[in-house]
Image (cartoon, rainbow, N blue to C red):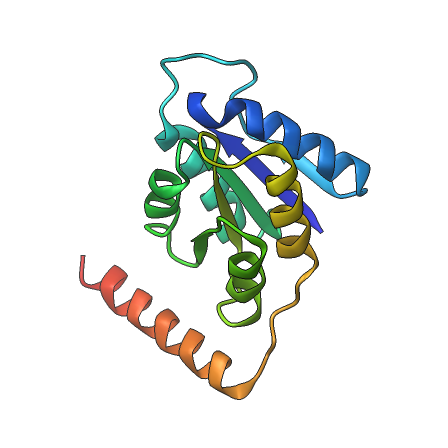
Length: 153
């Protein structure tokens, strides 16, 4: 599994910690930025890079970190094919994968501790999509809606 990761200034420190976890667990990952902490960094640039990379299938999954995880979630979900989930505990991470096949995880650097983030990321990466008929049906409806909205622009 290849994972793209990115953050803004508020998520930079937690992003760096998540990278260590990915390396320890043997995941292939690419840090799409920023390379250093800059208080002027906004979530838009890095969130878009990660989301578009996942949507294009260059990466299997993406992890984004901003202050609360909400800005990155909103941004990522604007990209067709992305199902981003802001997860604040392991149950949310598990359910986002089982029922929604979330392909982007967002975390809040200002509200999520390192150990908690490690647990959330681990569960999210290790949980497969349930692939039950009802969940597939719902995802197909989302995809259809996405195409309709995209084609009507």
